[in-house]
Length: 224
Image (tube, rainbow, N blue to C red; front, top):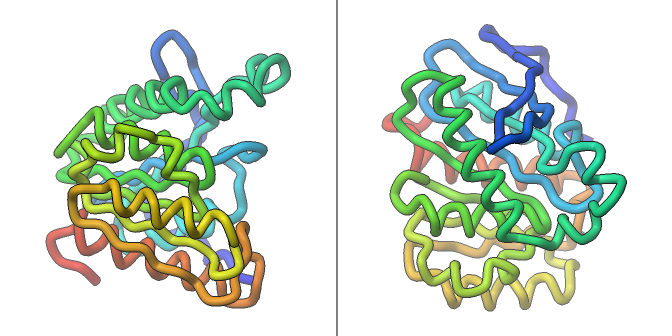
């Protein structure tokens, strides 16, 4: 299991993210003079408190990137119609698009924007990347369902990394299909023997390293 390192010098703010007419709870972590902002879109049954996403976000904070984890649904939506909304990729993408604009204002002037999506959140991230074009500089999908982005995949120009577990049968094939639809720079990385949530020893460490390397390559002028 990955150990969470102590907080870095900087600021972590728990506050509401303004998304259209909604105010959704979020966690914004701001290192000193951040080089980029990475927004996280979680999948079904998850939230801003996802241990896996927070491990990845913390690693990014340590190399100077700001991160924003927020809940895509408010508690009422989660309780009343969460299952339907979780698979409404266009709906989730609109919220993520609004969150990008909010995050830029909250974090200050940043040279680059990245999106990190897990499960259905990966499809929302790719649809948002298709909508915003070169405004999104890179995308990473962890155990995602990028195929659910549909025709939007062909409009994604952001460099995209798809990460899948080697034992996540069925999802591997869906990611291979998505990779064939992406027209820009894109790569599929398979973590050997890992299942869908990457609980195996060393699996999340590998995911974190791959994601950080990708974002450092495409979001920061001087990779660490």
